[in-house]
Length: 210
Image (cartoon, rainbow, N blue to C red; front, side):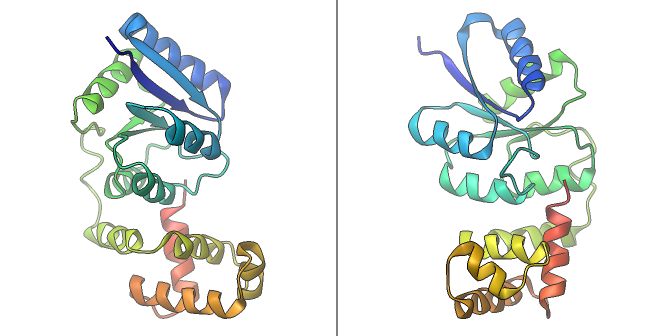
């Protein structure tokens, strides 16, 4: 029988160890546990190996908060993502749901809850904290849908806008012409339904506020 493969992605070794111990205690030898400490490491595993569920921290190096869920879901649609985070804000939980996560688990959860969440996601179900994922203003869900329509390059431009970068700085960072950046910004404003780069930056900061 093929072992279930779980990728634990967190930049803190102690957190990875705690999650590993929780899964070993609950599932024994039936699971093969993989570990990554960065978003690049996650992509390497998902590109080269079968992974049945990804346990993902939102604050690892290279992550852009819940925005990174969009690109991971687009690149690896068959892999369910269980977010494991120290953030216990309803807004972040709902954003993770809107951006395609199959579950959201608080790092403060007891060992037994960790196993229950993994079982649910593996079974194709959703796992979100009771009462948290549903209590968010519809405007955020609508904006999440708009952000999901951005291309990967437009999302990178949006993140850099949120950092206060000028067009020429963004062009240098992405190795493109400044005119290309201006075109991206124009499309971003149109897709998000905002009137200025400042408003777009505020949107990105809200959804990247992890």
